[in-house]
Image (cartoon, rainbow, N blue to C red):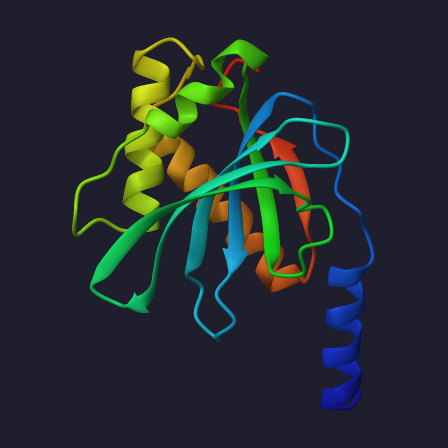
Length: 164
C-alpha cells in the first residue's frame, strides 16, 4: 500500500461522518493542531439549535505568550475537519447559557487549563453535575482525542464523569 493511499484513506474517514449533538448539550471539543504531535486545542461548545451553537475558548494566535478569550456564536462544528472528538459533559437550561460568558481566566493560562477551570466552576455553581474529578474528565477527553487521531475518525460521546 503506498503512502498516498494511506493518507487518502485517513482523510476520507475524517470527511465521512456528520457529527450529531444534543440541543443544550455542553461539550468539550478536542481539535487537531495540524502538526504531528498528539496535543490538542481544547474548547467548550454549547449546542444551541439543531445545527449550531457557541464556542468558548482561549487563543494565543497573535503572540504565543498572550492568551485571549474568544466567544463565537452561531458556529456549526459538525463538519469541522480539525475536530477529533466531542465529549458531552452536561445539558444546560437555555436560561443558563448567558452565564458561560461570565467565565474568567487568568493571564498565562492555556486553553486546556482554562477549560479545566471552567469545568470546575460550572460544576461548583451547579450548572453541570460532574461525578468524577476534572482531572479524570480531562484524561477521558485526551484519550478520546488520541484514539480518534490515531484511527483517523471523529466521534461525539457522553462523558462517563458527568450526569447529562
